[in-house]
Image 1 (cartoon, rainbow, N blue to C red):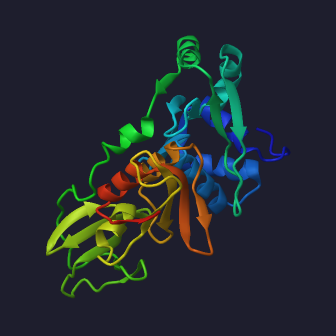
Image 2: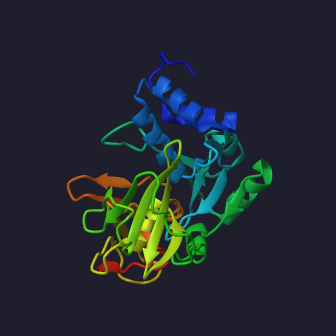
Length: 308
């Protein structure tokens, strides 16, 4: 990549696909260099690409890996498929070998670096997809979002853990009203809630205490486990009524981002990255079937507010 060129996130995706895998810190540095951006904006873009299914990140190993290209059917949209994963390198082959039309949607952003494009295939007959799969080796997964939503695990299925020691590094407790952490004196009596401590080189460990029992969790799931019963962080607004396949917009409280698996599932419904509404302090996912929104909420042990 040439740093003198105008930053193009689609070129970055092709480079990621060619590299295949690597160290996470190196990817942050390369992205910052190519985009002439600071490390924080580069890091944010890489994590947005993680949500879009372009790559996956192993935080413990500090590694990344390009996701294989995948063709998926979109809920509620006949004759349209999404080309996801690190698929940019296959676009020319897909266009040459298929009667389906490749449609590029340029994703914009109001803050930070531009996100990679979304690519759809518009087709008139199922045989066009079958021929494409046969000629390119692409895997096709129809009804991917609906099927995957049915296997979302419950965040309540968590591993037991030992309580924090009475001495050690800084221990913090989440305030469920503000969703912010503050220091907690280890000599105090432990109360129910989400706790955070640093364990190694900036890595955090999260524990949830519930009725005196301790469990391992992570930050995104822990927020939902520790939320107040009166909170309604998920809201689905219908475009088409309340059938299971009715489409609508899922709005998520900005203080409680969806866990990665849930966010990826929501993006898989359209291929479009979520949009942050800074005024309302919510993150919006478009084109979400009611059944998918309901299963996301059920997996997070959280009510779903429905607006028709």
